[in-house]
Amino acid sequence: MHGTTGKLARERKGEMKLELTINRHQEQVSMKFVTLVSIVAALGGLLFGFDTAVVSGAIGFMEHRFQLNQVEIGWAVSSLIIGCIVGAAMSGILSDRFGRKKVLITAAILFIIGSVGSAIPDTFSAYIMARILGGIGIGITSTLCPLYNAEIAPAKYRGRLVALNQLAIVTGIFLTYFVNLWIAGSGDDAWDIATGWRWMFAVGAVPGLLFLALLFFVPESPRWLIKQGRPAEALPILLKIHGDELARQEVLDIKESFKQENGSIRQLLNPGLRIALIVGVGLAILQQVTGINAIMYYAPEIFKETGAGTNASLIQTILVGLINFLFTILALWLIDKVGRKALLLVGSSLMTLCLVVIGFAFQTGHTSGPLVLIFILLYVASFAISLGPVVWVVLSEIFPNRIRGRATAIAAMALWAADYVVSQSFPPMLNSAGPAITFWIFGFMSLFTFLFTWRVVPETKGKSLEEIEALWTSAQGARNS
Image 1 (cartoon, helix red, strand yellow):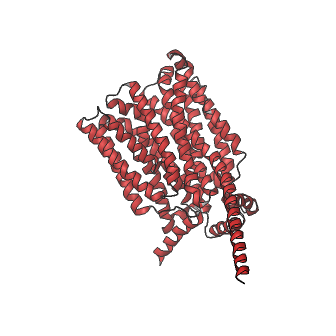
Image 2 (tube, rainbow, N blue to C red):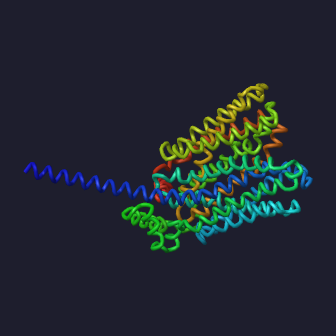
Image 3 (spheres, helix red, strand yellow):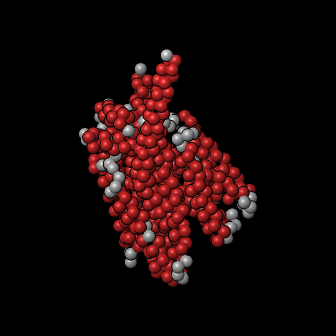
């Protein structure tokens, strides 16, 4: 009797091991599929990083080629951001109507046209038109790439897969520094002024074409397909991601979430979802007004203020890019382990400390040593593990299924508008108020980010998109009761 019982126990144990092995194999297969798809979508972030950084290497030569004044130099840099605001504004309506994939393909084409168009003009006006057109493509990809990854990723790994977008952005920025340096060194000053800067923009067509080609091999967002009443097309995609049982449950959960929504953007003004809108738009603006792009765009000028020579300031700027890149990789590992909210709290508190110290260094004249460089690097590292990747993750996951595209577009439009304001106001602030006051203003905004996150932002780690949606509706119910 005991022998029979032992045999049955051993058989059951063997079956459980086999089942566990099969489940692990299915998870490995599904993660390989999801990761490959997410990497393709994240390439949109590489275009984003390239296009925002490329102008820093070209602008000096363009100034001589087109005889630009200070206003025109500012316009040469910021015209891209105007296009980004337009692209972000359009992305929600277009992607909700035509699908994420088709609109991303359109964005890739716009980016390629913008890259080539920026490289060939004989007039400054033609350059501006091309930059705005490319900016529209970037505005669309900056909104839809993280959103697409959020809609296709399993909840357990969604944070790091969406954060791939931020890694691609900083990779694009970092690589562009070296591409610009290589092109500028390929000829003398006369060649750079006549031709070199054109190649800097034209190189962007290469990643643009790669992104366009790879998009034809990724599936449409399964949540968008179900929203369109096409669950039969969504199920095979979800089967690849989740396996049989979970995929069918996912279809039912997504269908149920659509039944509870009216699909109007006015839905965001309901008491529960109003908080989601405040969180999304608030974090989008705070990502920019805490000063990161001011430091990234104007790093050489900041380091020159400390007494560093031109070459030293350029080397220090590359060091800033390297720290940004390395700590974004760290964020990929932390975001699904530690959580979104914890990273935001730690990052914003460290950013506040760094900006206060940098301000005091300028105020007291202690800028000749390594102090400013050390705290700028610590500030960039703190941003790279928090506001950099986390904001895009939160924007892609907090809004209801039916209006996610349009709601994310509103937040992304606010982000790009804030970027434009900061990039335009930083140089005059630096000149009029001085570096100390300017950095203290950014420090105050970082402190506000800490308090805003602590009081308003929920933790979304490990929750499905439908569970996050239920979080807002339950909050609304609690307020109504």
